[in-house]
Length: 485
Image 1 (tube, rainbow, N blue to C red):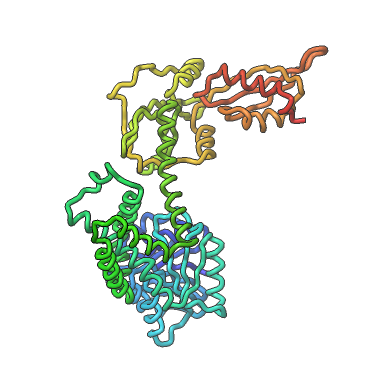
Image 2 (tube, helix red, strand yellow):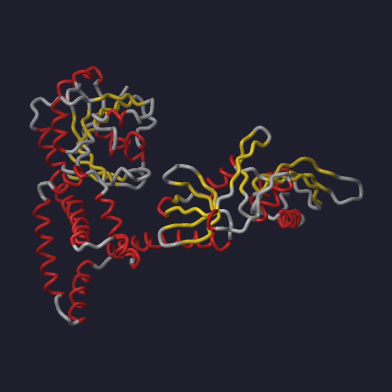
């Protein structure tokens, strides 16, 4: 049985692999020098603490033939750890370096005499904060089509959702000097300029444009990476020369734009545009538009909830809890809201009664649960930062209501002139009428020379107006076009 070893798996990309790629794989063995990080791993993962001397001798018997050993370490630590582990590696195993500097990793492996197993460079082109592998790129270097371990790993990564790019080591490091080193350098330069000029992002965000907002966001993202990760990218062999080329280009661009003539500046910009125009630029502009639109859709969504007064359901990123609120006000960074939730023991189940709307208060009052109808006062209001709000899918919201909210139920007879059957009421009616969570068919009621009737139990969102709901159900049942026959 193949074992998965993650060297440096207590955090970062190593931990991400455990949680998102190999979570259903057993056994997984994680090695890390941080005991606190190891203690946060699931019970299914075998944790191995590496002491200050960096020795793996205590774990020599962990390594078997055919194992995969991932190194999620900066280059200096990779070299040190691999050197310590080599004596224990078995035939037909596969060593995988996740480092961004694949040239240095590859050279170090090839410098080891009688290296006992296969090696593959595997560079994830994303950070450990992404939510899934789907659509993200992994660059493979030193890939050998005749090596079965290489081929099997490629299949595993593809099945996980990754997009695989195979490169020579030289091409990989050349491309990374632009894709990573240059990109990070631009963002670090942007952030450094703000710091040098004594400007606070809080002040600038009051007059933000989409371009500034996203440039600041990506600069922040780079700065939140482990400094050793970002530093290893800038220390790569090709990074220095690319930075120098970039600075030379900027100086030349500055000289060309250093004029009071708008037409001359426009000509310079147009000259750049004509050289890169095409599908790639169009796709880039569309990607930027999608990003801007996604933020705007969020703003429009919370605005609509504020205007309607309807309960807004979301996941609090900091606490991990689902919250139901009524949005009262919206500022640039925060949402002000009212919360009116009571935990009720109802028929031996704990359920949340949400008294945020007049409809909900009326419906709950019918079953003996009273909410105060006080006017909104500042002492009742709370705030949350927008960035702590995570939207839920409609399915997740529906399931939350079904499983956690104290819903309202009524049993009622309806005329059933078209003899709709059980499937109509239990499967179709909740889809036809907004607010119905569940419809239970109880019985058909038929008397001679009378229109057939049906008895059903309707379970619905407490925020719905009961009379309107009953009217809509009656209309749906009596309309022939919705017949299930």
